[in-house]
Image 1 (cartoon, helix red, strand yellow):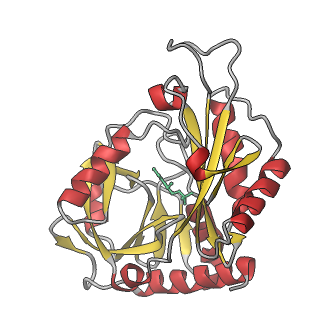
Image 2: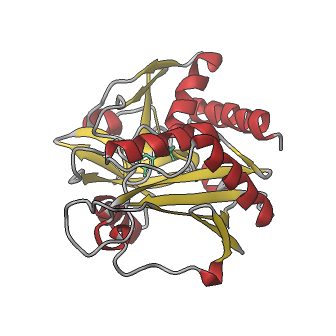
Image 3: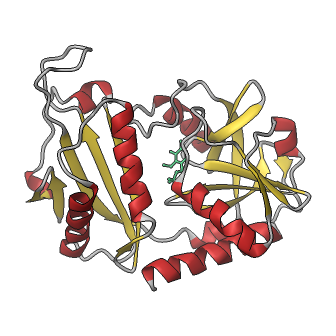
Length: 281
Ligand code: PMP
């Protein structure tokens, strides 16, 4: 199994982390997860562009261009003969004696590896349950940062209650999931939090918004409350690995008829067609 370290392809067993890497000590870095279907990146350009944007937002300069990175990621997928799975990629501010301020002579450390991950078909067909949790994170959730403790604590709470996801809210306004964006459908209109500093503007989210007009689903990028979440006709969460995941119960409250809704199913079909179009199953 091969990994990518900066621009070098090395054996996974040969890779190690420096104890003074700022990613390791501070979470001082950014990351991406890209879906691979049939050996091809799905919305790869969008993910790679977002990595560069996240890096710029924390004043981290990447030592390669988007095109160079794309080429290396494709080589990595080929070397590992990956068909269906993900590429995980991250970049940290590199190694320096521990101090909060940025090092003057810092050199970014980039790593990427692949992993086989099946599409979660059973869960997508049957739906999952979610809890709600207080969004205690910072105010730059638009950055795909390695600092994920707020997300982890919420996900762990969901997991310990046997749920798939924690739907986060700030003072009763739903923001996003611990590792996904959140959508509701009410009276044939899709609502999702606008792409502000309070959420990560998911690539799956963007793909969904792009596909809605084609199936005649009206979109409102407007935030909604916990009450509106509980009263929604349909609820789903979306992410690179979970795709479009219907939520059939929020806390103790059933959503609709406790089955994935018609619009959610239609979006799943359209999303699958988009995968086929881009990755040619
Ligand atoms: N919000 C958060 C907090 C996430 O961690 C993720 C998944 N990385 C998303 C939204 C969905 O983003 P994407 O569709 O780009 O995977």
